[in-house]
Image 1 (cartoon, helix red, strand yellow):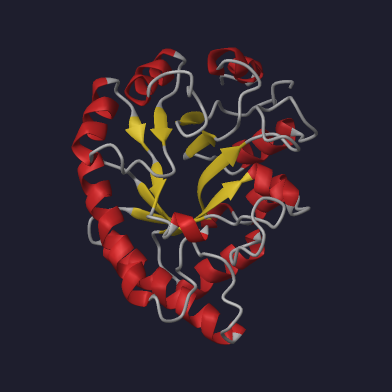
Image 2 (cartoon, helix red, strand yellow; image 1 turned 60 degrees about the vertical axis):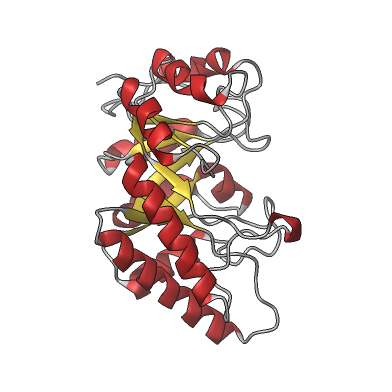
Amino acid sequence: MKPCQGSVMPRFSAHLGYLFSEHPFDRRFAAARSAGFQAVEHPEPYATPAAALRRLVDQEGLTFVQFALPPGDASKKEKGYAAWPGRQREFRDSVEIGLDYAQVSGARFIQVHSGLVPTDHPPELVWDVYLANLCWASERARQIGVGVLIEPIGPGTLANYFMSRTHLAIEAIQSANCPNLKVLFDIFHSRWAGEDPAAIIRAHAASLGHVHVADFPGRHEPGTGETNFEKIFSALADISWTGFVGCEYAPTSKTEESLGWMHNLPTH
């Protein structure tokens, strides 16, 4: 990957569900800092008490960027239920759990999973319930200074996921009209959906709250697949991106050995 003229080195976040898995969980924070990361994130950190996670983050001088709300019943392969009519109470309970954890751990964002498509309800009702849940969660999060993320996940990764395309996430954010509601834009998922990630970054900069990188196909580190990351980082520079770029990929070797692609990015 060649440096992009005039672009700025982004701030990177280590996704500890993927990176540094060769270390015990409590030692991944120090490993991330040693590797040069400024921040960390995790999909479901609840096995570690929030106060303990805060200590691990603080002692390494890291930022805890984001984590997801409890996804539901793992035995039923649930992936959230924000778009499920009749489960609003459960959703609100999960938001309270997530916000309590965020407040103690210092997380900047919570991530809301839509869940799979509820096929036994009219699409209009599903959409209305989803928007109402997003608005409720965003307002509760705003009260404690936390942002809310929604991440499109396409059928190539998760079949029948309700929030499956970036344009749907943008539409939801515009309809909800909540300032702290943003898109978690995942380059890998976007490529799976046949989208142009660089074009989306430029067109919808105001709606983005966090970015994930992984190459496509394979979901390994940038430079191992077909994605043009020069265009993507150029687009981030063009919008003066000040958020974090989360590294959510499966390293092809030890994590530290997979980070060479970062050294080819510009530093000015």
